[in-house]
Figure 1 (cartoon, rainbow, N blue to C red):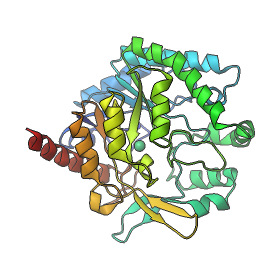
Figure 2: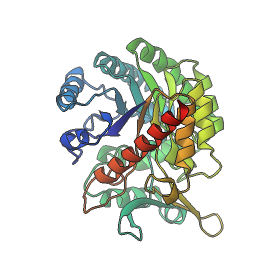
Figure 3: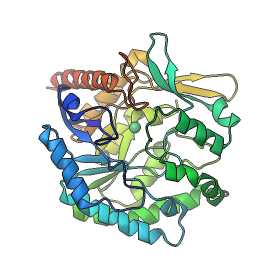
Figure 4: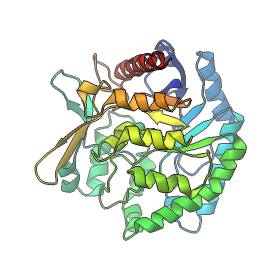
Length: 361
Ligand SMILES: [Mn+2]
């Protein structure tokens, strides 16, 4: 198991590589080319110069995240093949640069959604927070405008300005789409892309939808064990895998994360693990709230020991990273990506892992 750390790239992430290198036990970073719009090819020169920078800091670049899928692929419109060709070209370029895992998602329009990007906890720390009542109160355009205004000046993945501008049109295009149609578009994409990933020595890893239920009437199909079962069966290849995010799936109390780890990890289909906690609280009626809690079990709703035990039981050899850190100790960083709290999270995961592995000997 290798512990890695999310990094948004030079000029897009206030956390310097020098700092990440100083977290004990971290082997590499998980970057992206933040300035390449979804649908365009990631150029080799840019990938290689990013790798050089990362390696100059004693870190590896074996996993990349947010190679975003163009909306026309998700919509299944006729020009999707052009964007799929571009995606394949990106995979080839990443493979040549030694990348082993590519994390992506298949969520229409929006990436992860929260309704408060700096919700204050009793200890004065700030977390990402979700309240279904807030989502129901706004229309998507109002929500997008609110989100941009509260993202601390950072452009978040999936929330780039050029996408926000096209929002109304996009919503129109998705109106009336059935789950089955989105599944077919995902299958079409994977049947084209997975063979190319195999040739490039890359494992594709889909990130579950976050939150794992429909928002603003938009479909969310990767949300539970059943949908992951369907996903892996679309193309039977180790290159068609999962980025199992305990926090995204854990927002729904019905999801049993250790069971998913054993099942899909045991099949060799989890090349990449996001391991973080989430605190669920149910409000009145159908109102749902949760926040991205500190990593340790007592601070949230998930039993982190049981999750890590599942990874140990399957002798997990993939990449793992902490996820969504709080803002603590006066830090001003990308919402959800505070440096200090994710470093604490990494230490906690490494501590659990050492105890589990030594207990196994
Ligand atoms: Mn995640």
